[in-house]
Image 1: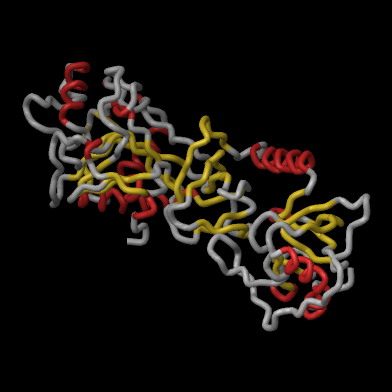
Image 2 (image 1 turned 180 degrees about the vertical axis):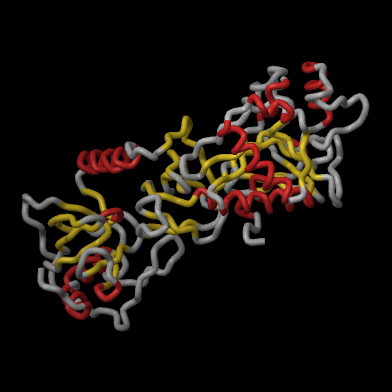
Length: 414
């Protein structure tokens, strides 16, 4: 195809512009710097449509249409900056010619040939569109490193203008930008990226660190909700489910922590992230009502602090039960026992029985936590507490009574 200039594109698009104007749509070329879309350069002079009819396509033409906001057009594949021509609005139909990598060559009404991102178009034929969408999703979920999630969970974007990419790589093409508070469906994980379904019914990859799993957060003076404070961390509060020794959920799924302790945990969180890991939180603040039930079930002060004699660090909001996730694989590191295994197998003084891999993982996690001011328990490999300066939480809070806010109200840049 002969390379065309932007001026030629403006002239050649006159017929399309006339048709768009007649249908009440936006002009052919427009700036694309609106939220949620990749930026494009606005034309210096708006085209003046010629009043000529929009040509029809041949009966055997395969038609595609733009489906995402303003679609940038280029004179060559790969989206080179010097080949940018302009943008066309959603709903414009064009004849499919061929593909090259992540781009498709289209023939616009009026005969102009342009390259566009294949992600921003779909076949007009409903059946062909369905098959193309299924093939697109299958290609991504069949990748060796892809980890499918058991449930399609709604996540909320925690970072303003989060780039979504064509593949799970920072160098991959940017397709879309999410605003803070935007909700998406997570399908699975590949390394440091989630495969997500956007509100516009398309798939892309977003950084794990930019999404959180809950659409609301709780507030309490002197404490923080760790879901917003550590957006890339993972949470499985076992005592908030039936999957614990009591067989019942002991408190709501709300991971609260005293503010100063949370600041020190965030220091550790950042060090783990720099090494390619993130924290998985199994327990943080634990109301005293839950402590009574746990102690009555275990009947062993080695593993559950006796609430009849005082308060544990969990009741003060100054302790965390945790493990680590490898961001490259999405899997939890091998540890001595499953979480909250109340036996001597979980005790640090039995470390001679652990494998070399377990010892390495434990020493790494412990060294980071100790360097950030935490202390440990010899009876539980998962437990760390902060005994330094700071406040404490009320020992028997009703977590459900804490004020709830939409996550988009949270200042994630603070």
